[in-house]
Length: 248
Ligand code: SAM
Image 1 (cartoon, helix red, strand yellow):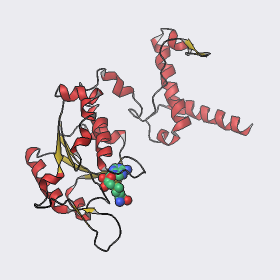
Image 2 (cartoon, rainbow, N blue to C red; image 1 turned 120 degrees about the horizontal axis):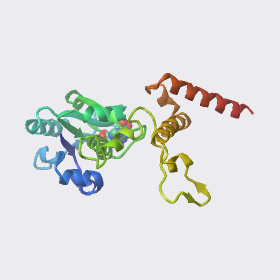
Image 3 (tube, rainbow, N blue to C red; image 1 turned 90 degrees about the vertical axis):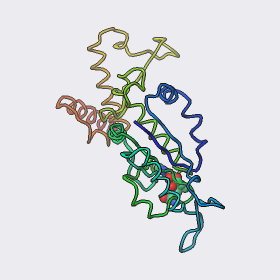
Image 4 (cartoon, rainbow, N blue to C red; image 1 turned 180 degrees about the vertical axis):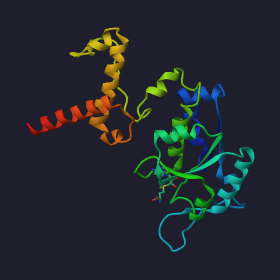
């Protein structure tokens, strides 16, 4: 897998790509990542990458020409790269998108700044993603979040291959709660089942906790999750119990 990032602030990525899981994966060359300075494709003598908006109003708009040249140059090095525009107006980036994007040969992230890119740039991208209903000052934050979410699904990037599968959203549910030593702290005890050594019971408890947690915090996820009939009735029972408690 190859990631290409087109940005006006290449230095933004320096430290995150040297730290933790991403840093180790870059070092081991489990994927390749190239950061491209958009200004390299701007016209001399001023190398302007933005201009005032037609129609007036505040803010600046990123010019289409340097972006077109940058995309052409990146495509030469990575012909099958999927081009993704970072924008709050894009579709919401979800774990299932990370899973799908991890299958691609290459991903090119186009990071906006100012008021965003000239509208015509949208014709040259394969997809537009938002990482949430809020406005960031630059697409770099979004690109970095997406690179991290995709990269950790690449085989070998996570030390323990199991941990990605059990993570929240992996099968449409939130993850179960975690505990570590000591077994009792500040008057709070770790659930007995986790101390029992009974792996079957632990797996059952964890699955039920995933369902309980998802119902409590993100009930919207349950509509899309693949659940067995038994799990659906467990959730329905929890829901009835909650309704009764609220009513009493
Ligand atoms: N004027 C734009 C609008 O209202 O839609 C917002 C521009 S924002 C200040 C500058 C850049 O940050 C955008 O071009 C985009 O690349 C990035 N950005 C901001 N919020 C984002 C989000 N929620 N998801 C992805 N990218 C975002």
